[in-house]
Image (cartoon, rainbow, N blue to C red):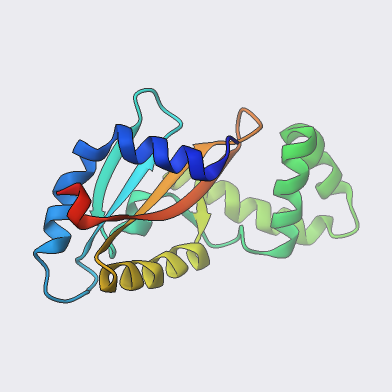
Length: 168
């Protein structure tokens, strides 16, 4: 992935007009709640896709997993980035924790069938909700950018905020 700071700056500059409505809506709110606007940028597409949603809607707008926070799945995903899906899957299914991994993989696969490949975990989403509250208190619009990873099927997730006054 490119330098995250430079990438965020580029996205903010390029997408300012697309972010401005959410910034105006945020400025017009007197208190933070689950209906506060947040923005998701899918930077894996050209042109980048901007989705405005609420704090409450974040897990419906971004594919979220119940199992990718499990340490075994985290190890698998790291290995996947190193050697690819087929080799990593064979290693983990044949490994010492193969049975446990198979159960996790089944849940992960079911999630992918229902909502697409997970971008982040429910724990990540909960952290973002807390971040959005802090951002609101600072007059900032909370944003998530999903970027391409270093492997064709991989991605990275960046969370950041933008001054709502600057946007509007």
